[in-house]
Image 1 (cartoon, rainbow, N blue to C red):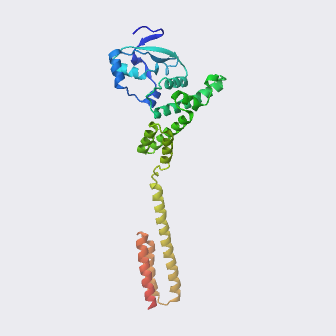
Image 2 (image 1 turned 60 degrees about the vertical axis):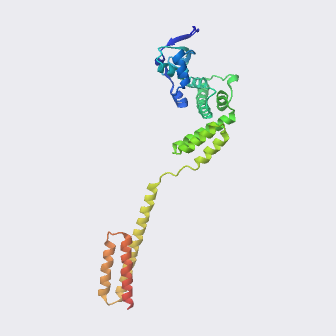
Image 3 (image 1 turned 45 degrees about the vertical axis):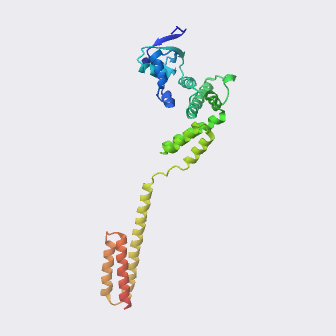
Length: 290
Protein backbone atom coordinates (compact mmCIF):
# COMPACT_ATOMS: atom_id res chain seq x y z
CA UNK A 1 0.00 0.00 0.00
CA UNK A 2 1.10 3.58 -0.63
CA UNK A 3 2.48 5.52 2.36
CA UNK A 4 -0.12 7.70 4.10
CA UNK A 5 0.99 10.63 6.28
CA UNK A 6 0.64 9.78 9.98
CA UNK A 7 0.18 6.06 9.37
CA UNK A 8 2.55 3.60 11.01
CA UNK A 9 2.76 -0.18 10.95
CA UNK A 10 2.36 -2.21 14.16
CA UNK A 11 1.83 -5.82 15.17
CA UNK A 12 -1.97 -6.29 15.58
CA UNK A 13 -1.32 -8.54 18.57
CA UNK A 14 0.06 -5.53 20.50
CA UNK A 15 -3.26 -3.72 20.12
CA UNK A 16 -6.37 -4.22 22.27
CA UNK A 17 -10.10 -4.42 21.62
CA UNK A 18 -12.26 -2.58 24.14
CA UNK A 19 -14.66 -4.65 26.25
CA UNK A 20 -17.48 -2.41 25.02
CA UNK A 21 -16.91 -3.78 21.52
CA UNK A 22 -17.60 -7.30 22.75
CA UNK A 23 -20.63 -6.10 24.75
CA UNK A 24 -22.20 -4.36 21.75
CA UNK A 25 -21.06 -6.39 18.77
CA UNK A 26 -19.55 -9.68 19.94
CA UNK A 27 -16.30 -11.04 18.51
CA UNK A 28 -17.46 -12.53 15.21
CA UNK A 29 -15.68 -11.57 11.98
CA UNK A 30 -17.64 -11.82 8.71
CA UNK A 31 -16.20 -14.53 6.39
CA UNK A 32 -15.91 -12.08 3.49
CA UNK A 33 -13.75 -9.73 5.60
CA UNK A 34 -11.48 -12.57 6.70
CA UNK A 35 -11.06 -13.71 3.08
CA UNK A 36 -10.28 -10.15 1.97
CA UNK A 37 -7.62 -9.67 4.66
CA UNK A 38 -6.02 -13.02 3.83
CA UNK A 39 -5.74 -12.05 0.15
CA UNK A 40 -5.01 -8.33 0.32
CA UNK A 41 -4.03 -7.58 3.90
CA UNK A 42 -5.44 -4.63 5.85
CA UNK A 43 -5.68 -1.69 3.47
CA UNK A 44 -7.58 0.85 5.61
CA UNK A 45 -5.71 2.04 8.70
CA UNK A 46 -7.09 1.20 12.13
CA UNK A 47 -7.81 4.16 14.42
CA UNK A 48 -5.99 3.50 17.69
CA UNK A 49 -6.00 5.39 21.00
CA UNK A 50 -2.65 6.95 21.90
CA UNK A 51 -2.71 7.71 25.61
CA UNK A 52 -0.57 8.25 28.70
CA UNK A 53 -3.16 6.07 30.45
CA UNK A 54 -1.87 2.51 30.10
CA UNK A 55 -5.42 1.15 30.27
CA UNK A 56 -6.44 3.20 27.22
CA UNK A 57 -3.24 3.14 25.19
CA UNK A 58 -3.39 0.77 22.22
CA UNK A 59 -7.19 0.28 22.25
CA UNK A 60 -8.67 0.02 18.76
CA UNK A 61 -11.28 2.74 18.30
CA UNK A 62 -12.18 1.72 14.75
CA UNK A 63 -11.10 -1.47 13.00
CA UNK A 64 -11.56 -4.15 15.67
CA UNK A 65 -12.79 -6.69 13.09
CA UNK A 66 -9.85 -5.94 10.79
CA UNK A 67 -7.50 -6.46 13.73
CA UNK A 68 -9.03 -9.88 14.56
CA UNK A 69 -8.98 -10.88 10.88
CA UNK A 70 -5.32 -9.83 10.62
CA UNK A 71 -4.37 -11.94 13.64
CA UNK A 72 -6.29 -14.94 12.29
CA UNK A 73 -4.56 -14.46 8.92
CA UNK A 74 -1.13 -14.43 10.54
CA UNK A 75 -0.26 -10.84 9.56
CA UNK A 76 2.71 -9.41 11.45
CA UNK A 77 1.78 -5.76 10.99
CA UNK A 78 -1.22 -3.55 10.16
CA UNK A 79 -1.49 0.17 9.37
CA UNK A 80 -2.76 2.40 12.18
CA UNK A 81 -3.52 6.06 12.79
CA UNK A 82 -2.93 7.35 16.32
CA UNK A 83 -5.69 9.31 18.04
CA UNK A 84 -4.78 11.04 21.28
CA UNK A 85 -7.29 10.45 24.07
CA UNK A 86 -6.88 10.31 27.84
CA UNK A 87 -10.56 10.27 28.88
CA UNK A 88 -12.21 6.81 29.03
CA UNK A 89 -15.65 8.31 28.33
CA UNK A 90 -14.39 10.17 25.26
CA UNK A 91 -12.83 6.93 24.11
CA UNK A 92 -16.07 4.95 24.51
CA UNK A 93 -18.10 7.65 22.78
CA UNK A 94 -15.80 7.68 19.75
CA UNK A 95 -15.56 3.90 19.76
CA UNK A 96 -19.34 3.70 19.33
CA UNK A 97 -19.61 6.53 16.80
CA UNK A 98 -16.85 5.08 14.59
CA UNK A 99 -18.52 1.67 14.52
CA UNK A 100 -21.97 2.67 13.29
CA UNK A 101 -22.60 0.85 10.03
CA UNK A 102 -25.55 0.52 7.71
CA UNK A 103 -26.01 -3.21 8.39
CA UNK A 104 -26.53 -2.76 12.14
CA UNK A 105 -29.88 -3.97 13.47
CA UNK A 106 -32.31 -1.77 15.38
CA UNK A 107 -31.34 -3.68 18.51
CA UNK A 108 -27.66 -2.82 17.97
CA UNK A 109 -28.51 0.83 17.37
CA UNK A 110 -30.68 0.92 20.50
CA UNK A 111 -27.91 -0.58 22.64
CA UNK A 112 -25.39 1.84 21.17
CA UNK A 113 -27.75 4.74 21.83
CA UNK A 114 -28.32 3.63 25.43
CA UNK A 115 -24.58 3.55 25.98
CA UNK A 116 -24.14 6.96 24.34
CA UNK A 117 -26.80 8.45 26.64
CA UNK A 118 -24.97 7.00 29.64
CA UNK A 119 -21.60 8.32 28.44
CA UNK A 120 -23.00 11.75 27.58
CA UNK A 121 -24.34 12.03 31.13
CA UNK A 122 -20.89 11.42 32.59
CA UNK A 123 -19.24 13.85 30.13
CA UNK A 124 -21.83 16.52 31.00
CA UNK A 125 -20.95 16.15 34.70
CA UNK A 126 -17.26 16.52 33.90
CA UNK A 127 -17.87 19.64 31.80
CA UNK A 128 -19.98 21.13 34.57
CA UNK A 129 -17.31 20.52 37.22
CA UNK A 130 -14.55 21.93 35.03
CA UNK A 131 -16.63 24.93 33.91
CA UNK A 132 -16.28 24.04 30.20
CA UNK A 133 -19.18 25.28 28.08
CA UNK A 134 -20.69 23.14 25.33
CA UNK A 135 -20.35 24.52 21.78
CA UNK A 136 -23.68 25.54 20.19
CA UNK A 137 -23.21 22.84 17.54
CA UNK A 138 -23.07 20.16 20.22
CA UNK A 139 -26.00 21.30 22.36
CA UNK A 140 -29.05 19.11 22.86
CA UNK A 141 -30.30 16.38 25.17
CA UNK A 142 -28.35 13.15 25.57
CA UNK A 143 -31.09 11.25 23.73
CA UNK A 144 -31.07 13.76 20.87
CA UNK A 145 -27.31 13.40 20.48
CA UNK A 146 -27.50 9.61 20.63
CA UNK A 147 -30.33 9.55 18.09
CA UNK A 148 -28.28 11.70 15.71
CA UNK A 149 -25.35 9.28 15.93
CA UNK A 150 -27.33 6.06 15.42
CA UNK A 151 -29.50 7.44 12.64
CA UNK A 152 -32.94 7.30 14.25
CA UNK A 153 -35.39 9.94 15.44
CA UNK A 154 -35.37 11.03 19.08
CA UNK A 155 -38.74 9.37 19.80
CA UNK A 156 -37.79 6.12 18.05
CA UNK A 157 -34.46 6.02 19.85
CA UNK A 158 -36.08 6.51 23.27
CA UNK A 159 -38.63 3.75 22.56
CA UNK A 160 -36.00 1.35 21.19
CA UNK A 161 -33.77 1.87 24.24
CA UNK A 162 -36.68 1.09 26.57
CA UNK A 163 -37.64 -1.98 24.53
CA UNK A 164 -34.15 -3.54 24.74
CA UNK A 165 -33.96 -2.75 28.46
CA UNK A 166 -37.29 -4.50 28.98
CA UNK A 167 -36.10 -7.43 26.85
CA UNK A 168 -33.00 -7.75 29.03
CA UNK A 169 -35.18 -7.81 32.14
CA UNK A 170 -37.35 -10.52 30.61
CA UNK A 171 -34.28 -12.58 29.81
CA UNK A 172 -32.88 -12.11 33.30
CA UNK A 173 -36.17 -13.36 34.76
CA UNK A 174 -35.94 -16.56 32.72
CA UNK A 175 -38.32 -15.52 29.92
CA UNK A 176 -35.78 -15.96 27.14
CA UNK A 177 -38.31 -16.82 24.43
CA UNK A 178 -40.36 -13.72 25.18
CA UNK A 179 -37.24 -11.57 25.21
CA UNK A 180 -36.18 -12.99 21.83
CA UNK A 181 -39.64 -12.26 20.42
CA UNK A 182 -39.36 -8.62 21.50
CA UNK A 183 -35.95 -8.29 19.82
CA UNK A 184 -37.28 -9.94 16.66
CA UNK A 185 -40.15 -7.46 16.47
CA UNK A 186 -37.72 -4.61 17.12
CA UNK A 187 -35.39 -5.69 14.32
CA UNK A 188 -38.30 -5.71 11.89
CA UNK A 189 -38.46 -1.97 12.47
CA UNK A 190 -41.67 -2.19 14.53
CA UNK A 191 -40.31 -0.23 17.48
CA UNK A 192 -43.64 0.82 19.03
CA UNK A 193 -44.98 -2.74 18.74
CA UNK A 194 -41.79 -4.12 20.32
CA UNK A 195 -42.08 -1.68 23.23
CA UNK A 196 -45.72 -2.61 23.84
CA UNK A 197 -44.86 -6.29 23.60
CA UNK A 198 -41.99 -5.93 26.06
CA UNK A 199 -44.15 -4.07 28.57
CA UNK A 200 -47.04 -6.54 28.34
CA UNK A 201 -44.69 -9.51 28.65
CA UNK A 202 -43.08 -8.05 31.74
CA UNK A 203 -46.42 -8.02 33.53
CA UNK A 204 -46.69 -11.74 32.83
CA UNK A 205 -43.42 -12.59 34.55
CA UNK A 206 -43.63 -15.92 36.36
CA UNK A 207 -44.22 -15.78 40.06
CA UNK A 208 -41.20 -16.33 42.22
CA UNK A 209 -40.89 -19.62 44.03
CA UNK A 210 -42.37 -18.92 47.44
CA UNK A 211 -42.16 -22.43 48.87
CA UNK A 212 -40.76 -21.15 52.15
CA UNK A 213 -43.87 -19.04 52.68
CA UNK A 214 -46.08 -22.03 51.88
CA UNK A 215 -44.24 -24.17 54.43
CA UNK A 216 -44.55 -21.43 57.05
CA UNK A 217 -48.30 -21.25 56.45
CA UNK A 218 -48.68 -25.01 56.71
CA UNK A 219 -46.72 -25.12 59.95
CA UNK A 220 -48.89 -22.32 61.33
CA UNK A 221 -51.95 -24.36 60.36
CA UNK A 222 -50.64 -27.45 62.14
CA UNK A 223 -49.83 -25.38 65.23
CA UNK A 224 -53.31 -23.88 65.10
CA UNK A 225 -54.93 -27.34 64.91
CA UNK A 226 -52.64 -28.58 67.69
CA UNK A 227 -53.72 -25.66 69.85
CA UNK A 228 -57.41 -26.23 69.08
CA UNK A 229 -57.02 -29.92 69.86
CA UNK A 230 -55.37 -29.17 73.20
CA UNK A 231 -58.13 -26.68 73.96
CA UNK A 232 -60.66 -29.41 73.24
CA UNK A 233 -58.85 -31.72 75.64
CA UNK A 234 -58.89 -29.07 78.37
CA UNK A 235 -62.58 -28.33 77.75
CA UNK A 236 -63.37 -32.05 77.94
CA UNK A 237 -61.48 -32.41 81.21
CA UNK A 238 -63.30 -29.44 82.71
CA UNK A 239 -66.61 -30.93 81.63
CA UNK A 240 -65.53 -34.24 83.11
CA UNK A 241 -64.67 -32.60 86.43
CA UNK A 242 -68.05 -30.93 86.54
CA UNK A 243 -69.83 -34.24 85.90
CA UNK A 244 -67.58 -36.02 88.36
CA UNK A 245 -68.59 -33.72 91.17
CA UNK A 246 -72.26 -34.30 90.46
CA UNK A 247 -72.05 -38.09 90.00
CA UNK A 248 -71.24 -40.59 92.80
CA UNK A 249 -70.12 -43.29 90.31
CA UNK A 250 -66.48 -42.27 90.52
CA UNK A 251 -64.99 -45.31 88.78
CA UNK A 252 -66.65 -44.59 85.42
CA UNK A 253 -65.39 -41.01 85.38
CA UNK A 254 -61.98 -42.05 86.64
CA UNK A 255 -61.62 -44.50 83.74
CA UNK A 256 -62.48 -41.84 81.16
CA UNK A 257 -60.19 -39.33 82.85
CA UNK A 258 -57.34 -41.81 82.52
CA UNK A 259 -58.06 -42.22 78.81
CA UNK A 260 -58.31 -38.44 78.42
CA UNK A 261 -55.00 -37.85 80.17
CA UNK A 262 -53.21 -40.34 77.91
CA UNK A 263 -54.61 -38.52 74.88
CA UNK A 264 -53.45 -35.18 76.26
CA UNK A 265 -49.91 -36.43 76.86
CA UNK A 266 -49.66 -38.37 73.61
CA UNK A 267 -47.08 -37.39 70.95
CA UNK A 268 -49.24 -38.78 68.15
CA UNK A 269 -50.60 -36.56 65.38
CA UNK A 270 -53.44 -34.27 66.59
CA UNK A 271 -55.79 -35.61 63.91
CA UNK A 272 -55.40 -39.19 65.16
CA UNK A 273 -55.77 -38.23 68.81
CA UNK A 274 -58.67 -35.89 68.04
CA UNK A 275 -60.48 -38.84 66.49
CA UNK A 276 -59.80 -40.93 69.56
CA UNK A 277 -60.97 -38.11 71.84
CA UNK A 278 -64.20 -37.73 69.88
CA UNK A 279 -64.89 -41.47 69.96
CA UNK A 280 -64.24 -41.78 73.71
CA UNK A 281 -66.33 -38.72 74.52
CA UNK A 282 -69.28 -40.00 72.48
CA UNK A 283 -68.94 -43.40 74.14
CA UNK A 284 -68.97 -41.76 77.55
CA UNK A 285 -72.05 -39.69 76.70
CA UNK A 286 -73.90 -42.75 75.43
CA UNK A 287 -73.21 -44.63 78.68
CA UNK A 288 -74.33 -41.64 80.66
CA UNK A 289 -77.63 -41.63 78.78
CA UNK A 290 -78.32 -45.25 79.63
